[in-house]
Length: 298
Image 1 (cartoon, rainbow, N blue to C red):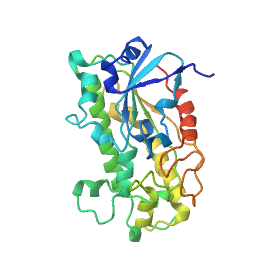
Image 2: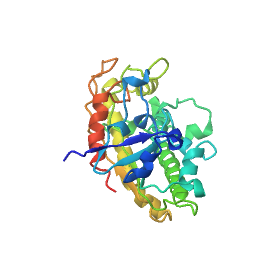
Image 3: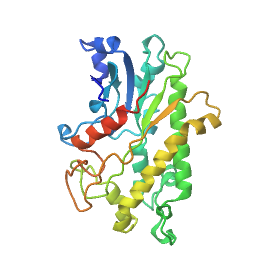
């Protein structure tokens, strides 16, 4: 069934101009926070779109977007930096009553952990480093052999604390939106390749895998394994938070793995569903929008 209502995507400044009425008159009012999959993934910016722009919903809906390219989940919960996010959620009389929070989050944190080099000296980054030293990779066929188990543990612990921080603000006494669902999407599996998003922007995975001397034949299988592990984590996040004493986490995963076709390994530019190494093309985002909207149930 095709939905009839395109999502109206608003910027914070729109709330004070002649577009502000779109939020108040929509059936669903959404707060969107995230990274490039909700904002811009290519220079020039008009070369790609994003998931939000491709959503069609069963009811009129408006989303105020705070997304920005490169933003990490860890940055999203730095409340002195994300003033609008915390104000819209828990700003007392300045807060809005939302029907859901949409998050495109964790991908940049994941890539930062993958890109961390073997010789990193910062203890926090060293703890989160995901790729295993080349001379410590055990024999075997499992893609997990390329990853540091202690890095995974530290990474997921950090991400869990970040989501708990979002939930704490959602359920703050000053919030009008306590308990509303938080939708968080998985990513899909990009082919590591020499396809940048602009000058000095990537490639990401190709750079990391080359640094760690991972055989090229394992690049896509390893990336697929990592993305699937992220999806498993999101699927278990609600239960994990509940086990840590969080009441009603109401985390709703949006599963997007397997939606897009990987680009050819030797391609260096836009190809099919991908505009560059890690960002989908307009065609790709159209596919993601269809997959996403079917799972956004309020």
